[in-house]
Length: 489
Ligand code: AMP
Image (cartoon, protein in one colour):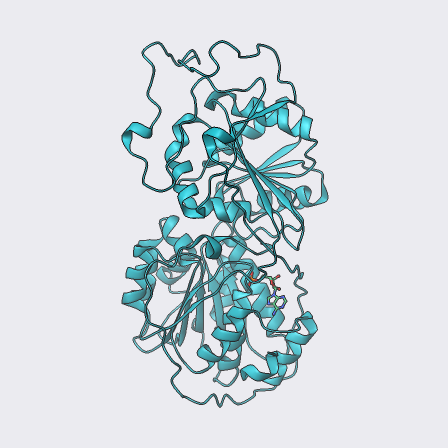
C-alpha cells in the first residue's frame, strides 16, 4: 500500500514524501481513511507506530478546507500528557502541514503563559496542549472551545496515570456537542474504556501490533539485590560492564535525584530527568546524554515518554514500575532498529508483586542472575506469573532478621562473599524458571525539520461517507506482543 491510496491531498502527500516515508505504517493505513470519513476512532497504539502522522495527516486534510479559526478559537484540539509529546506533535503538525496554510501552536506548563495567550489571540486551526495549561488558558479566556470540530486525546492511558482524569473530563465537558473524537492509548484499561464510552460515538476500533515485528531482541535479566545495595550494584555494573550510555528508570522523582547524587559520588556522570525539572533542564540533560557527555540518564516513566534516543544499548530498571505495562515501555527503549539491546532490573524482595505482575503480562519468567558480592540477604521470592501473588508470596520478615540485612537467607547465609563484588555471576534459573522474555522494538528515526509556510492550496475534501465496518468491541487489549513498545521515542 502507498500513501497515494489513502485519500490525502497532494500537499500532504508531498510533505510525506519529503519526510522520506515510503509506505504508511499499519496504524496510518487504518486510521487515515477512517478519520477522513469522519469517524470517531479508538486506537490502541503506542509511540513508535507512526500514530502521530496517523491522526495529524487526516486532521490537516480535513482542516485545509475550513474557514480560518476566529480569534481565541481553535478548530482542532490535540491533548497529550507531557510537554515533550506536545512539542513533538506540534513539530509533526508543522512538518506535515508545511505546504498548507494552516495556523497551529502548542501550549504546555512550565513556561510563561503570556506568549501562549498572545499566540492564541488571533486564533489557530490546530492547538496542541497539555491538560493543565489548557485549562488555565481557558480560565483566563485565552481559548474558547466552541468551534472545536475534532478532539484528539493522545496517550490517554498515560494521562489517567498522571492524574489528569478530572482535567480531561472538564475539557470534554467544555467541548461543543457535535465533533469528531479520536482516542489513542497504548493500553485499554477499564478506566480508559469507561472514558471512551462517554466520549466516542460508534468508533472505529484500531489495534495495531508494533510496526516492526522482526525479531529485534531485548535481552532481559534480573539481578536480585537488597534494596539498600541497589545504588552500589548499579555503580558496580556501570564500571564492570563498561556501560557508556544507559537509561536508568526510577519510580520517583526523589529517587532519581538521590541516585544521581550517589552516582556522581562514584565519579559517574549522571543527570536526572523528571517532572520537577524545568523544560530547559530536561532539554539540557537529554542533549548531553545524546552527545555522550552524560553517561547515565536517570528518568521517571513519565519524563521518559516521548524521549527520542536512537540506539540505546542499555536500559536499567532501578525500581520496578507499579504499572506492569511501563516495564514493557521501558525495555522497548533499547534494541531498536534491528539491533539487540539489554534491559537489566535490580529487584529487591519487596518488589515481588511488581515482578509477578510484569512476568504475568509478558507471559515469561525473566532470568535471574545474582552478582557476586551483591547477593541479597532478603531472598527474592519466586514470582507467580500465572496468578496474582498471594500474601504468602510476599517475603516474610524473619524473626531473626533485621533491617540491617541480617535476615535469614537459607541459600546464602553462610557463603556470602564479604568484599567488593567480583564479576562472576551466579544464575538462578532454577528458581526463576527457564523462560526468556523478549521484547521487540523497532525504530525509524526521522528528525523533524521545521519548515514554514507554503502555497495556499486548499484541496477539497471529498471523502465518501461510506460507513466503515465497525469492529466488535474486544475485551482486554493488553497482550504482551501489543504492549511491547516498538518505537524510537
Ligand atoms: P510516532 O509513533 O508518531 O511517534 O512516530 C514514530 C516515528 O516514525 C517518527 O520519527 C516518525 O517520523 C516516523 N514515521 C511515521 N510514519 C512513518 C512512515 N510511514 N514511514 C517511516 N517513518 C514514519
